Image (tube, rainbow, N blue to C red; front, side, top):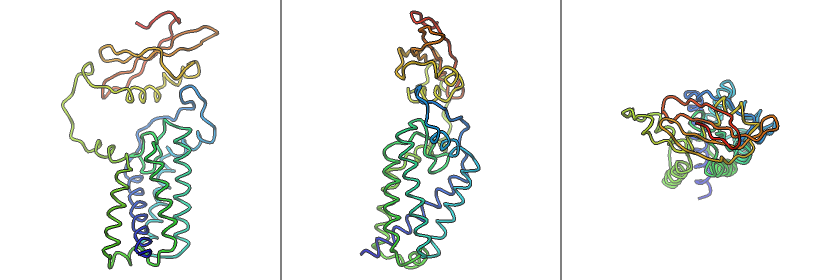
Length: 272
């Protein structure tokens, strides 16, 4: 029974690494600069550098090639060095995901390239931890992945199916993948289009207007939020040149035009 469990982890890890490699090499992330502040709080330098590296196309391709090489190595050899390298890689990934979850709530983990662009949540952290545990269990597996595939025991097949189902349940990337392949819908006028607040905040925090005024914003909680036509307005308290002000952002609700505009008004005033 223990041997079946160990062999199953080899197949699971090889599959995950090869899928991650394919995603990183074939899907490009949408261009967006990583902010130096999150909700007005400076991002630690080491995490800012980590995010910059994560968004680098060269780094993404390099990681993808490394993951693909590890996945193939798991399939063709049972050498302990390959298993140890896989365990270290997943342990490092777990640490990175945990750091992003705590310190960079705006950033995706990049685990599966552009499909992992959304912010890290608990599922991503739990998934990384489970993969690290699977890598530890696989250290004692007697067979390489190809040897297991040549004659898959019923126990291995059942456990592999269950673990893949768990992996799918813990993967927010599937929604992004489905969205990329969804058939185009009829255009909805922007004034009638449903525009959820998470979308508004995502557009706002990625915009040059936010970067321009971020250091002057005094609170992460807006004073007021309202919608007029094709725009949602978000007002924050701020301080500019020793004066209390309101910094008002107008965020487009159009699906294809993520424009963001800003204005600074007196604290007692209101953007028109």
